[in-house]
Amino acid sequence: MRPCSPACEWPPMPKPEAPDPEWLARGAAHVWLPYSQMKRAAPALAVARTRGSRIYLADGRELIDGIASWWTACHGYNHPHIAQAARAQLELMPHVMFGGLAHEPAYTLAERLSALLPGDLERVFFTESGSVAVEVAIKMALQYWMNRGVAGRRKLLAFRGAYHGDTFATMAVCDPEEGMHALFKGALAEHVIADLPRDTAGEGVLRGLLAAHSHELAAIIVEPLVQGAGGMLFHDAEVLRRLRRLADEFGLLLIFDEIFTGFGRTGAMFACDAAGVVPDIVTLSKALTGGTLPLAATVARRHVFDAFWSDDPAHALMHGPTYMGNALACAAANASLDLFEREPRLEQAARISEMLKEGLEPCRGLPGVKDARVLGAIGVVEFEREPDRRALQQRLIERGVWVRPFGRIVYLTPALTIGERDLTALTGAVRDALSAGGRDP
Image (tube, rainbow, N blue to C red; front, side, top):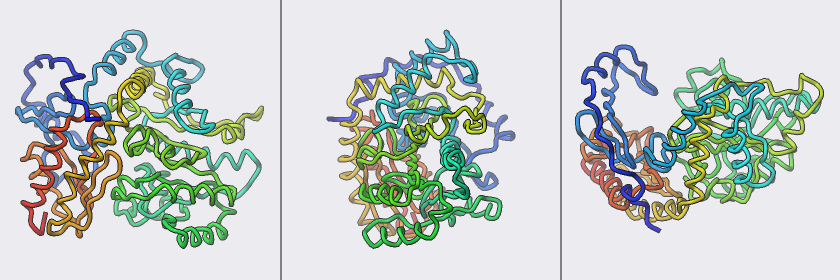
């Protein structure tokens, strides 16, 4: 199955109004950008509009988006079905508080997510961002034991190479050597950090660690199959099966952070499907609304929820974001799920995987390249040492693509609907940009 050509889904683009040419200069003095030392950062590119896999800049340039806006726009930008659902919901009700009030988009979405996820993952708690979804998962895991009258289980087991978010609770379960989070050492909760059990020997080492610490652990948390922002580090499904066995052996909850891996990115709808493992709690966000609106979900199995089902008010989960279960975002998420049902997204992901392998494999022979690897609709080129990312990104922009290198990698996570021509242009631009950079890309 070929990736879908943008022309087969998107109607003709309406003619945009003439943009205000001064907004970028006026606003730049007041905006604080993410992940940037702004004194040294390259100026942000002014975007006028988007369509399919394309970003149209205010200066008239056009870029093929190779990373789907941090992995969110799984159906491409401006998909008409999601746009129509959002417009219709906006007319009816953009938002009402979720405390004491209910609305159809959220309740339908919760039912649909429960049906899609494996096993008895059936209770959905909505939030607005991936970091908060993980915060809620951590809170659920700790309070699960408190509600059962078990004291002292206040820590999690997390893994080197992990990334779970930028809030304080989530930073504490990220890789402890990751520079940004290391700044806050001493201010963060201390958890137990281990290596992933990639083989039988690793499983034995982890078993020994759990034997020493299980009395203080509430749960194990892992990004299944891919540690995303930690460097696009892959592991196989057997790692997850080992974690499930060890969690059961030591009576711990198992949390899968599927914020990156969910909704077809690894080639399966969810990474837990590929592994045949049912976690006790799973977190979802990123592609949940097809890249249109902020929404996240923390989904728990029945036995986890049962620990909160009580006549005692102290056993309630005391969490409630203001925009929890936002009706507009839930309508977009339901429309996104419609597209996964109606259109061949997983087949498209498989074809993207084949093309990424073909297009990135030649990078292995380039100077300074350590590895080139692909899993599902994720393609990665890893360098032996950290490149000049600003120069590399500029070379990619000059070749008409939007790709954001980080650390020692450049990666591609395109929309699942990207056309073959655009995908070929992306992989070709990466090869050309790395070749042009020589030994110092």
